[in-house]
Image (cartoon, rainbow, N blue to C red; front, side):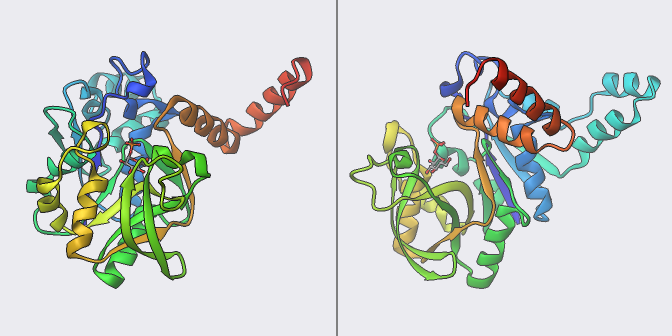
Length: 289
Ligand code: G1P
C-alpha cells in the first residue's frame, strides 16, 4: 500500500515561526514532525510514500536526501552514530514529492496524488500528527481494510468543546472499536456536532475518493475538505471508523506542539530524567504546580 502525506499547508497557526520553515519540519525533541510520520508508515510496511508539498517546503525534500558535505564532516570527525543516522534518512522509503500549486485544502492536496496512487487503496497520514503506539496506527487501519475491503478512518473521542477543531462523525458501533459511519461534518460548533468521535488524521481510502473529491464543492474556510469528499464516498460505499489503540499528538497548533514536546520529552530515555529534575527544581523555586 502507498501512503500520501499532505504537507502543503501554510501553518498559519504557527506564525511567525512558520513564515519560512515548514510546520512539518518543526522539531519534536530531536526529529522533525514529518520524520515521525514517515517512520510510522515504514513501520507499517509501507515503502512508497508521496509527500504533497508546496513552494515553501523544500527543506522537507532536503531532510530525506544526502548531505554529502555533512556526511564527509561526520566521517572525518569519526562521528559514526550521527553519520549512520543521517545516512539512514535517505533510505527510509521511496519518497516522491508532488507540489500543490495553490493551498486549496486537504481534499485538493490528496487529489494531487491521484496519478501516483492509481486504482488501489491507499493511506493518508497528516503531516502534523504523530502517534505513540505498539502497532502503528496506520497498520491498524490497514488490518481493518484487509478484513473488510472498506475505507476506514482513525478516530478518537475528544472533549466536547474541542469538536470545532475536527471532522466529526455520526456513527454506530458495529464491533469492538469499529464504527459504521452515517455522516461526517467538518469542524462543527459543539451545538451542531453529531458526537465527539473525531477524525484523528490517519485514513485508509479506496480510490473512489478521487472522483468524489472532483465533485466536492469548497466547504469550511472556503477550502476543498476531505471530510466533504468522504460524505460523497459514503453515498457509494460503506465507510468505517476505527478507534485506534495508542496515543495521538496533534502538532497542528502551538499549544498542541508544546504539550507534545513536553510529554514526549518527559518519557524520553535520554532527556526525560533531567527534564523531570529541572521541572521539580523550577517548581520549588517558582511554584507552578
Ligand atoms: C484536518 C481534517 C479534520 C481532522 C483533522 C485532524 O483538519 O480536515 O477533519 O479532524 O485534520 O487533525 P486540520 O487540522 O488540518 O485543520
